[in-house]
Amino acid sequence: MEKDITNWQNLWKVEKSTPLDLSKLITHLNKIEKKGKLERIVLLIAVPTTIIVLASLLPLLSNIYYLLSIVLISFGMIMILIQSFRSKYSLISNDAELNNHKYIKNLIHKLKQRMLTTSRYMWVYAFFLILGINIGYIDILQNFDITLIVRIIIHIVFTGIMFYLMYYFIEKRKKENNREIFPLVDFLENLN
Image (tube, rainbow, N blue to C red; front, side):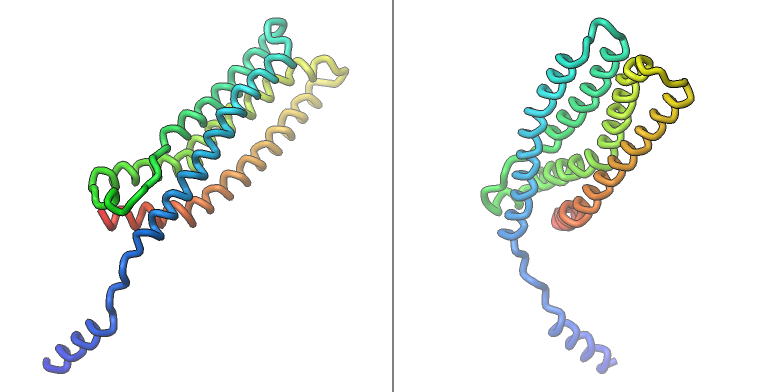
């Protein structure tokens, strides 16, 4: 019995808790938000620019395929833009904010929204993008003197390439989130 107590005492002496480095945590959280802010700025420029370019290049009113294509692609892009703003949080200026239970809970929610953008909404965007592009070039392929089977093969090959590219970039982003954001969420949930 006395030996067990001595072992517990030795264990207690050896395993001291490491001090919590709040400044490092704040720096990391702010880095993620600054990256998100840059992404939102890029999206705010890219979404209307893409819609304007597509609308000016494609004769919208002359063909229902073009109109439907632009609507689907635009819907997907606007959905990602909205989700990007849903994951926005203010930069942390001091560690006193991390003492607020409600603030930490909101921060966890925002970080999870950011991860959800990649894991769920990017796939929805990929679906609308691939569908919109496929519908958009139905009319273009009809203008060429190729058989229906060749057109279907072109659609399948293009869809496969687009799906692979989206899969690659989404998986890359998910790994980045698992490396950067997930440990923060886990830490904040334990802190909370």
